Amino acid sequence: MAYSVTSKKSGRAYNLHMKEVTLRGGRKQVIYFFAQDVREGALDKLPEGYEVMENERTGLPMLRKAR
Image (tube, rainbow, N blue to C red; front, side):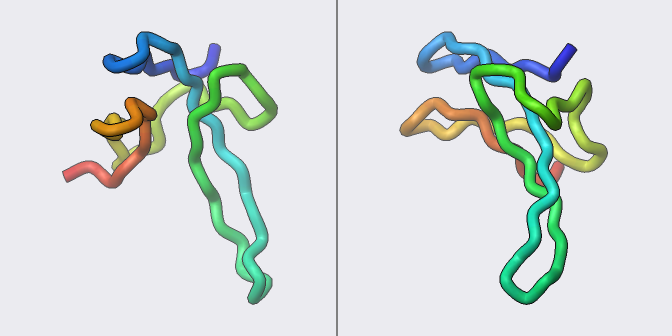
């Protein structure tokens, strides 16, 4: 089951995903993103050291490093 967050503004549920991408210089980096559907790379829990915040203007969830 994917980690899910419900937006306070829109009431929609978003699922957390992870993907490893290759940057122009050849370096690999892990990105985290939320999507409404469950796709390949869905995560069951939050990555350690991160917390979920919601963009006040758009209502979309985002990850940020825990304070």
